[in-house]
Image (cartoon, rainbow, N blue to C red; front, side):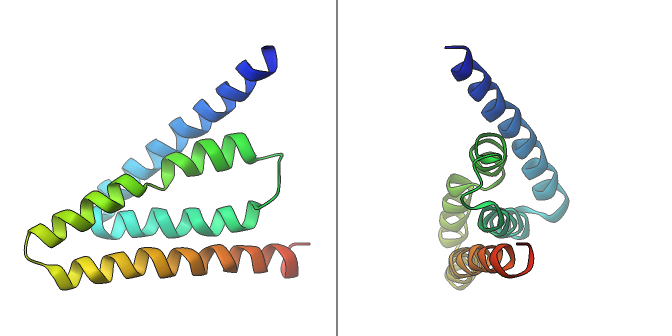
Length: 116
């Protein structure tokens, strides 16, 4: 039981830090650029830390789970679409998905070829 409490604390602490960083980035850069930035950065870091259980709870589940945000991404895409800016909405979606996957792959590459 004690282990579960420590694990939950690690996730909670990471989540708190990730949420604060996301708020700061979005506040400074604006919603569109901020959401893209945190999602791509989070994908890169997730690729770098892939299969590293030492950081899984605090960084991957907590920090990156709160930093990156599918709900904010989805909500902002719908908001852009509903405002009549379908082209920007489409570009926003493509950038998040394609750049996010590319950043994850880059993180895996860096981990296996340069950081090992």
